[in-house]
Amino acid sequence: MGDKLRFRLVSGEPAEAEARVDDTEFATGEFLMARTLWLADGTELRQHRPASGAQRQQGYERLDNEILAGRRLYDVAGWGSYPLEVSSLYGDEATSAEPYALFEPYRGMPLREAVAYIINEEFDAFVVSLLTGLCWLAAAGVAHRGINPDTVLWDGRTLRAQITDFSRSTVFGVPRTPVTGSPVWIPREQRQRTCYGTVGPRDDIWAAGRLIFFVRNQGEDLTDRGQLAASGLDALFNGMFDRVLGPPEGRPTAWSLLEDGLRRRTGVPQPSVGSARLMKERARFLQARQRRHPGVPEPPDFNADIDWTDDPSGVR
Image (cartoon, rainbow, N blue to C red):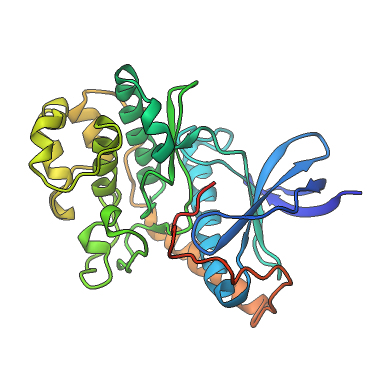
């Protein structure tokens, strides 16, 4: 006998389904747990739920981030398609005492593992796919804020990158807040003691640039700007790459890196002034949850034994 799920599809339509659930859970994103389930028709999905215990409230917030980013990406992609370069939200149940999000299975393996297998001929496809994914995020008015070798996957079969884990994401136009995790992948304007400014389409570019260097040099970390000269990346991007690692005000956008740097057409709309509407959607969403479920009790699946600081991404 399977579990009965009632949720809303990413398209907005209500849905009910019997599901067989794998009880084995694993950390995914920040303050979130995941498990695999199969709908009655055989569809395999990932179910993300808030961690319990002391991290329960943070888990709610991180799940909200994933749901809002997923809905907005679906919306901007044209209601009926979903960008292949980002993890695909299937549906969600966002306002009950046991909220969750359903995602299609991730494609590929984390770049931290896959980098050893990416051959030179695949590098160009990786760069184009990664920047295309960031263009979709910008078009949706969403900053990921956690780009690193654990949250970006590489599928060597389809030659596409996939951006996953939107637990830290937020919308354009809000004040920046500090991001947790390794400072190797967090730009200065998003760190605890140096955080400033407002979120925009250049917030993910610093980490994306480091990730491009990481793949170009088969897993080598960028510790000194002098390493860039030998990488050939500035020449590849027609002199634009050096600015990627500068302050946010002077960084190129993902759209500019593709169109002006690599001379590639993106096929993705440029960011619009629609982020104000998204901010209002977010506020209404959080207010509705607070009204319906103040002081939600902790469920029995206690996750206090997980040290979220060991591997802040926790992506699987």
